[in-house]
Length: 178
Image 1: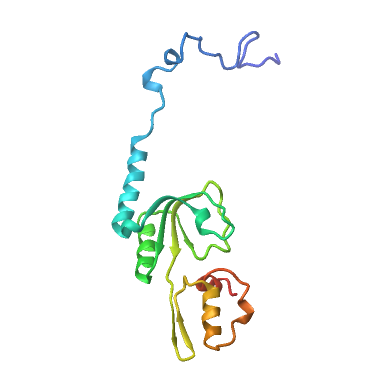
Image 2: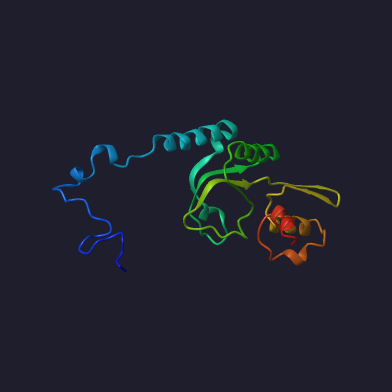
């Protein structure tokens, strides 16, 4: 007969519950939302497990604006600066074992980070150092690219002058094919 079979005239589609005097009466204790303790435990477990792998160098809620050249970016859940190749491998292995989202950060010059930050582990490549053996340079991949250029210039080694305006780390320059 063309009428809506769900609602009859004068009836609401979704009738409201009767109003009561206060909020506690409308939401009895059994339905009041509470924090999920399993979720809280999971966060604590991730942090404690990361600390077992990475030690005291692990930071929590570290503002990423301190690690980007544009000085923008919210907090990372977890932040670790790897100063050796072994520490870098340990951090990557820990993130993989814990199924934790991770991001490998170099000099921070080619990174835009949301003000909401990063949910997971940010691993900063901080493997620095330059050693010369004649005309060969052995350079840590976290070394600032401009430091390498100046060190080569000071030893009268040419070839990197073109890159003097490129910010970032040596590893980032290689990765980005600078």
